[in-house]
Structure formats: structure tokens, C-alpha cells
Amino acid sequence: MLQVKNVTRMFGPKAAVDNATFVIEKSAFVGIIGRSGAGKSTLLRMMNRLTDATSGEIVFQGLNVLGLQGAARRAWQGQCAMIFQQFNLVPRMDVASNVLHGILNRRSTLSTVMNLWPQADIVRALTILDRLGIAEQAPKRAEALSGGQQQRVAIARALMQDPQVILADEPIASLDPMNAQVVMDTLRRIHDEDGRMVIANLHTLDTARRYCDRVIGMRDGRIVFDGTPDLLTTAAARDIYGADDTFNEAATSTAIPAATAYAEALLA
Ligand SMILES: Nc1ncnc2c1ncn2[C@@H]1O[C@H](COP(=O)(O)OP(=O)(O)OP(=O)(O)O)[C@@H](O)[C@H]1O
Ligand SMILES: [Mg+2]
Image (cartoon, rainbow, N blue to C red; front, side):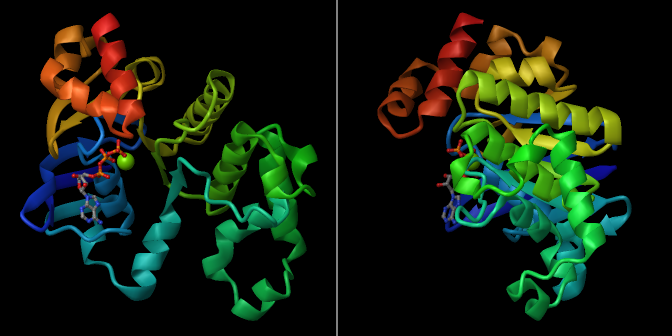
């Protein structure tokens, strides 16, 4: 169980996340939605300890995540793997090595530099790639793969850590619809088959409705919706994404995903 209690993150005078409180049961697949700047990434990054919270508590199965330092913090980061929109692979490195780097923090620098991996780890990496349907890509450079394949490599790298929690920050925002579906299906399968908690920031309502057991909606740092997808009515979506006057701003900024989501909300 993950408990987020009154978590706030200030950037100067502005609260990127404002007093967020919720509890996620172990088995949940949760989507976080909201327009650009709502605080979705900051929230995930605080869970993973990539960003410090200003106040509040995050507790995972009794462990006070925000209090962890040094090795304990790194161990927690191993337990909650992060997946990013831009995959964050090493482009010129082969796929198998990218996956093996998921367990980097357990290895000595020398063996990493020499690219010396224990046989058991290599077998495990290949098994995971096989499970995700991309075993044949193992020897190729990561940059030679399609976006959807690269994101599956990133998921494989995350699985290499054997994490209890997978945090995905807009995992499909850079993908075409076909690849987006494959990646979301993969995340859902990992959740269903392994019982891992998945929390994903998603930029379309449609994806949130289709894949999530529960959706958390953020607006201006605050949680303004928390419920099952069937409760995500047009009115609720409007509450999350904001009214017409703010839409123009989103449409003219670089925040295309938010604008798309808003348009979807209106069409829903
Ligand atoms: N390092 C930072 N320094 C200053 N302000 C920041 C920083 N990171 C985030 N912010 C601000 O915090 C707010 C929330 O940002 P965040 O990236 O969490 O939003 P988001 O919901 O993930 O948006 P997007 O959909 O565009 O990814 C924004 O106003 C943003 O400008
Ligand atoms: Mg973000």
C-alpha cells in the first residue's frame, strides 16, 4: 500500500503539488491525468525521490519514503522503477545492455565499464525481452528500434530491477496509436500477471478510461478527481482540464497533449 499524505512541493511561491492526499492499494493500476503544469510529473518524481517534497509524507508498506537517504534511498528507487516519455535509453548501446543497466546500482563500476555481466543476469534480461516480444532486438542498438520497441526496452530495464512499483511519466506521449496500445497493453499485463503497482501519468482521457482501475485528476497542483473511470464524466473532465478561456492558452503553447486531452474531454 502506498500512502501519500498532504504532500506539497513548492517552486518559489508556487505549489507544483498542493496538499495531495490519497492511498493506493497494492494491486491498483492508477492513471494520473491533468493539463500541462498540473503537477503530475512532480508528484511521480517525489514518489521516486527524484524531487524532494516541501512537506507531507509518502509511505510505502510502512516505509517512510521521503525520509530515506543514501543507500536506502537508492534501494527505494530500485523498488519503484521509472519509465519516461523519451525512453531514456542509451541510444548507441545494444538493447540487452540497456536492459542490464536496470541493475546498475547493484554492480561495481569496473564490471560495468568492462561490460561484464554475470551469465544469470544476461539470461534474465533476454527472458524479460522475450516476454515483452522483443527478444530478437537484443543485439541491436537501441536507436535502431521504433519508439514502441524502445519503450518496451525501457519497461524491460525497469523489470530487471524487479520493482514493486512502476511509475510511468507519459509513457505513450511520443508514440503513434498502434505503438501506444502495445506499450499500454504491456504495462497492464505486467500489472495483471506480476501484481506490480503501476502509476502512470497519461495525457489522454481515453487511455485513462481504457486501462486504469482508478484515475486521479490534478488541476493546479491539487487533486480534483479520484475515482473509477466510469465516474469520469464530461463534467468531471471539464473540472480537471479547465474551461474554455484556458484552453486557448494550452492550444498555443507547446502543451499539445493537454490540448488534445481537453478536446477529447469535450467530445466524450
Ligand atoms: N524544477 C522546476 N523548477 C521550477 N518550477 C517547476 C519545476 N518543475 C516543475 N515546475 C513547475 O511546477 C508545475 C508542475 O509541473 P509538472 O511538470 O509537475 O506538471 P505536469 O502536470 O507534469 O505537466 P506536463 O503535462 O506538461 O508534463 C508547473 O507550473 C511547472 O512549471
Ligand atoms: Mg509532466
